[in-house]
Length: 153
Figure 1: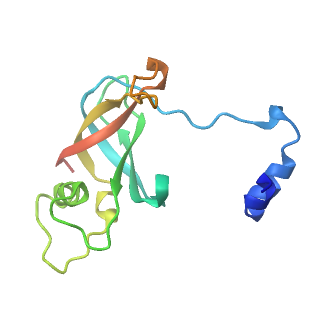
Figure 2: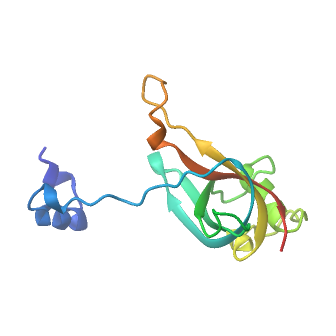
């Protein structure tokens, strides 16, 4: 089967418009900052599909701690659920965003609760690996929000 037969209309149009390799642009790069605890403000909440069709919630944060990294944007990804299990990461982080108040059994746990709040967050470095389980070079490392410790504002 030809590659053009596997593409949807938009992809096919983009494929046909690629005249040569000069049209290929680099995507957005992830940032690497020192690990530690930072004050961050949630500036965006998105739902999406990740690898292999997994439903995810992506939270984008901006560092608000006074430092050389102030204004740096990082993300946190969590699994999305129709019914959130109490042992899930999303449940834990949602309760922290809700001021350490657990939801009642029938409460809706909207990710909008994170938006515009300031949190104390722990930043960690992601060190991707090759298929043979050896680490990729340091230029591929990037920082993410590992977890939220508490809501400040």
